[in-house]
Amino acid sequence: MAEANSAVTGNTIVNQGRPIGLNFIAEADSAVTGNTNVGLHRKLLNQGNEVETNRIWGDKCSKSDIVINQGPTAPLPSGIPTYTVEIMNVCVSGCDISGIHLKCGWFSSARLINPRIFKRLRFDYCLVNDGKPLINGHTISFQYANTFRYPLTKQKRWAEKKKRWAERVRDLYINS
Picture 1: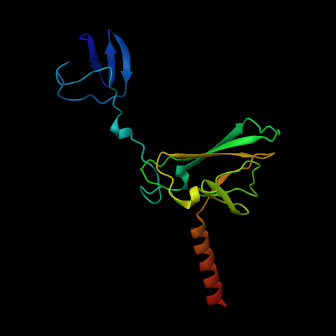
Picture 2: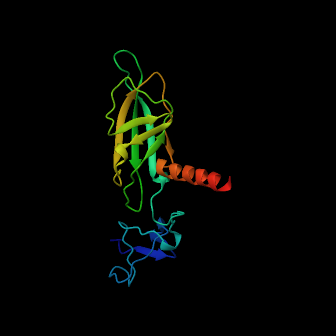
Picture 3: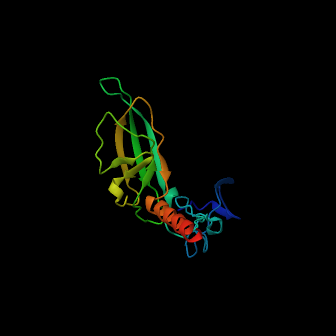
């Protein structure tokens, strides 16, 4: 709790004539100074300034909730550079994301990677976690070894691509 010589002016806490806190919401029903709590240990954000996520599908997770980081690690004894990849589910609404596919070129590695964690199915198409859900807040990581770093980027789900392809074929068939 604040000392007796602390006061609230506007939305700034003043202690011994010096401002010590900004932009808080005072809590009601406190015995410190009338009905305003000026506890220095607790700072509440102004609810009017909340930032809401701008999601097309509401609270559903999207591919923007998958974060991919990779960086160099110690090379193999043969001198081949190695890289560590981390794929994270950072969905704020608590959902698990499955069917994570990455653009990966002709990805290959001199170090064996567990295919249930990461595997290339064809050119520029790699599957993460065997297509199973990556739990909210969890990370999958693996190391690969190659003479150069592969750019790994998020890709729309193959099922969505396949559906669009089927629609195009159907449209071509109907229009011909």
